[in-house]
Image 1 (cartoon, rainbow, N blue to C red):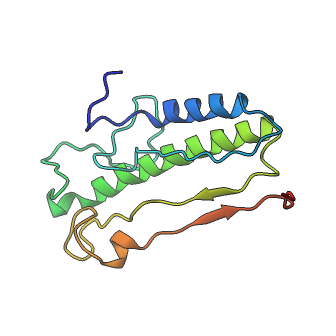
Image 2 (cartoon, helix red, strand yellow):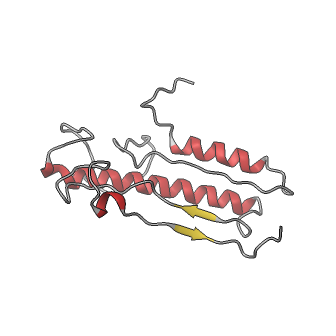
Image 3 (tube, rainbow, N blue to C red):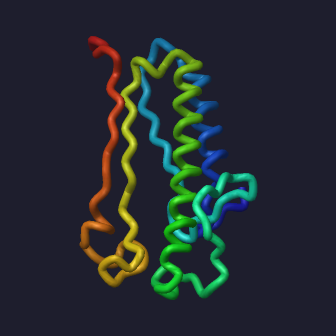
Length: 151
């Protein structure tokens, strides 16, 4: 409802939907669930209540996906790091739900970003503009099941 092509749903709402799905699952069935968090995507907007431990972070200068004043890169990076913090909080809350539902130990959990972010390191401000490592090289985290479940 009221979502346009440029609207990003609050990651807390996305997490809540995923938790509702998990709580309704049949424990005798296997599932695959993909959850996509968006706060770490430009323009890094966070809800007013979100913690913002990295400062300064106020974007009060011209700020576009393909450019912003390079002298403000530390402020933009702080806004991005606050968004990472917010997403991390949502992932942690979701994992707590898996534990409460007794699903954590037997779950395979994979956390992977879709791209890096440049912050002018190689002359580019964001992502999707080059093949330098800062934009394309990311991490992947695995939490494997306690044991393999036979087919």
